[in-house]
Length: 193
Image (cartoon, rainbow, N blue to C red):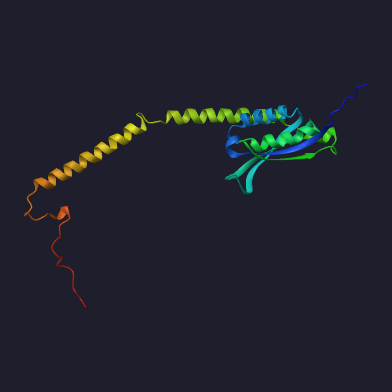
């Protein structure tokens, strides 16, 4: 008589904290979180963006973060694997996973905004594309290196012209006023003591 061990599945609430750079590509962040859930054999019940705010202290040199709230069903032994995967992740700074057994299905369903997340991801991707297109239309002709080399060549040419004009001037000639020589004292100033 063989005994089967039944894996216990629980309902959990997870609060993910993503860094600002990952939030800039919001669609990729959502794909990354869903991959982490897949690795943990979890079924996502509800997910929404909770908030984007300034952190009370820096975490990995990040001052701002995006919070994503998720409710999921997962085997109890896979929760530790999910936490470990978040710690390894470059896009996620922290995660807090708690049991959500006390919540009803209706209370969890209130927090389901996956369609809103997808819409926001598409909007951010479109904004990034338009900003990239605007940036490329404002680009100058010529590579930056060429521009810098041209400026350096102009500076060298002006230095050599100045040096050539100084060498052409005789040494015993008195410098003129506009070349930085001393001017005659101004007679209109009074020396009152």
